[in-house]
Amino acid sequence: MSYPPNRGRREREEPVGYQTNRFVYGPGQYEFRDFVRVGGPLQVLLAVVTTVGIAAFWGL
Image (cartoon, rainbow, N blue to C red):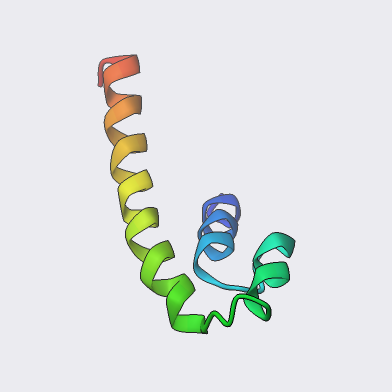
């Protein structure tokens, strides 16, 4: 049950998680920490928005 959320998280936080990240990793001179710096807070934001949205939609 925890595999899909963990897979989605890795795609945003790692340059090797998704093919388009790999395309821009070299030419854009990105470093691993650049992906973590943006992907980490994005993951937290998405978790909060999803939790609040589900609670609002189903009235939990």
